[in-house]
Length: 224
Image (cartoon, rainbow, N blue to C red; front, side):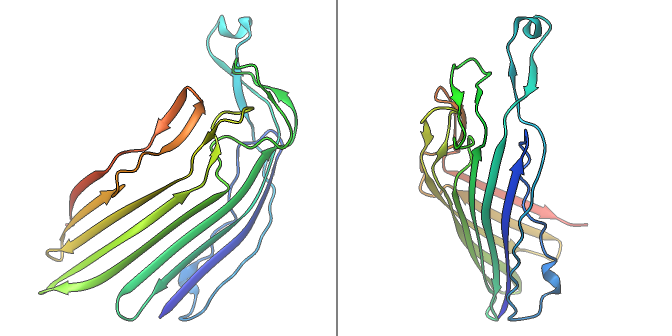
């Protein structure tokens, strides 16, 4: 069994910032078999929050954005890849992020809310988990693979300055791939297997993005 595990402790302090990058990934191909690699790191980042400027002098000449706000983010990310001798593979990724505003300012989007220190950032779930398993095998002389995965996204704020929350959701996916020849591969994917109703992000309680319903995809790739 080959085990490759990467973990990073992530911290970010944003002074007018929307940039929350994770710690750099480790070159996992340098790891030895049955070796588990763990790394902890805390960092600070800086950038700009941009909000709508609806002042008459701004809207008179077009739509503008202005910098505003401060935020802090800290969390944990864990990634693991396990490859077994029987061609079974397991991949898992978990992220915990605590992201919140650290100053008080008025919402400039016209909704009349005041953002206070400790208010959560919009569309930022505390918990997110992604797991995928796959099995390789032979079909005659052809190489094949089947697998599936589960994605969990926790609840998160959906309207800055309010208590409007997007609910948590879990979706399941399946896939299968057949290498017909050395150059030709055919793949089938089923996304959102159980046709769950879910919402990926929002701007306000009247502006919510729904997730895609169950979807079937058939693709082919040819190399030359």
